[in-house]
Length: 77
Image (cartoon, rainbow, N blue to C red; front, side):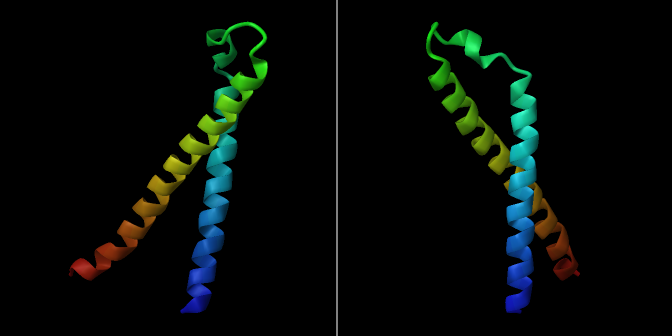
């Protein structure tokens, strides 16, 4: 039982990291810096990092929940 929790923890961490990396690549294609004033590069980069973590975590949580729900469907019958 504890081993299953450990496996799920590793899966969740890996999922979050992968989706954060994918989100980072996608956000690099968007020119967020252009909506900031000149000489505000640091603030734009911080926003990109926060958006990356937020979006990547939300998408990862969605897929983790979806997998968990799919595994629980067997208890319906």
